[in-house]
Amino acid sequence: MLKFSSKLLAVLSLLLCLAASQAHAHRYHFGLTELSVNERTQSLEIAHRFFVADVERALSLSADKEMQDAQKQMEAYVNQHFQLLSASGERVKPTWVGMESDVHDVWIYQEIPLTEVEGKSFKVRQSMLMEIERDQVNTLNLTRDGNTESFTLKPGASVVKIAL
Image 1: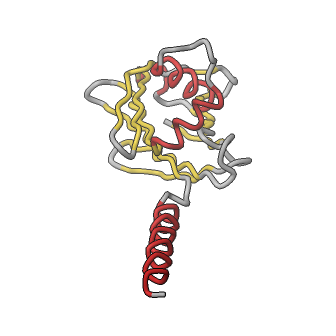
Image 2: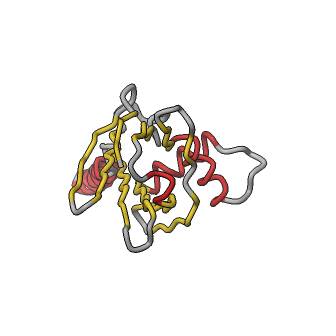
């Protein structure tokens, strides 16, 4: 009986550990996009941060199966889901700077010459990961002249108007 109890206890402990590890996986889906006016470099710097697991999932569902280059897949995905549109509806395409990642996060960097955007109004569409997560929330921060404005974007409400 004692031998049976210890085996049962070991199995229950293992199940509890497995359940706890599943509960530890992130339950929220959050992304961050920073738009920063850099007077020194005369550019609008753009940085996106997302969880690695979410980005991997999005790329696996949306990537062209023929495309082998992960950076090109990522660039295509970002260009599809992050867009700046001028007041006339013309798309301003940021230049790809690069990306980096650690165990938890992926950082993606882009930029636009300030001469293309300064003094103008734009609609910014930031819908990254919203096609795979209904509860995805993307925060967009716009920093210029030492002030930061924050916008919260969600599925169905992924566009915001900004003025530079």
